Image 1 (spheres, rainbow, N blue to C red):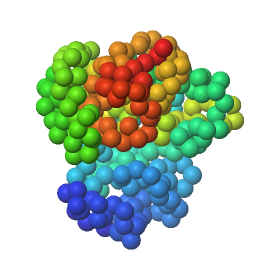
Image 2 (cartoon, one colour):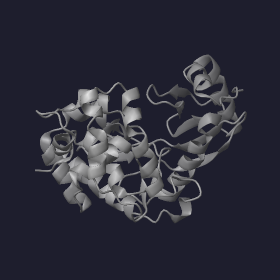
Image 3 (cartoon, one colour):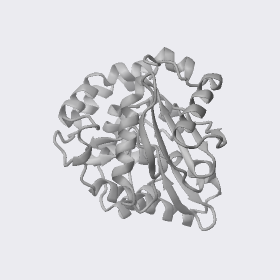
Length: 307
């Protein structure tokens, strides 16, 4: 029911098109024993994700992203019941047709933390970020060995080298001004990043958008979206923390780091920001405060400092 999708161009044409996607999702649901269940597509995200009735979520991965489907199914299975915050329970995952893969999972309860953040009182924000810190501490303590066959990058030092070599060109394609581009090589050369860190299971996109919360008492009720998971240096996960959870609030970051049990060097975190798979420094500069002087070291302190 779904056509082959092997390129970015094909994905951009097919994935947003509900006249193509919905019949495929309905057909797959029927094959999974959920024929006739109402389908509601979630509006956000780069992949097609549907609520199937009240109890299930179906996530679809085109052939171009088939590896992500395998990774998410395996990671969620590995994590089930092991974190302080609920994660989706896998009901099934595998191949569909024409290279597509799927993950059928339980539906988590709660409201998206990003959407309700402005309503959360300061004291509850502090507790929520502490819960996130505790959750990351447990996630990073879990042995990732059973997932090494599906999660990269493998050689962390080689990954850092590749990302460093391309860092300026990558930000130039994002239209970062030259005044910032010129600072990147010397800044990255000044930061010592581990080449063989203790391997940790990484979410890689720790954002308010990926947490659910119960407004009645403001408690976390879910963490989701594990398809970009990796194995590597635990500090890499704090890029998302600083940019999308605490958002340049040193008090909140200190609270989260205290619950996590470790504080990272701000320069290391900004270096990983530049090397991150989804790095987009011009976007972050629009979203977060920029200190006077506009230097990368001052930016590191502004975004990732705790004092």
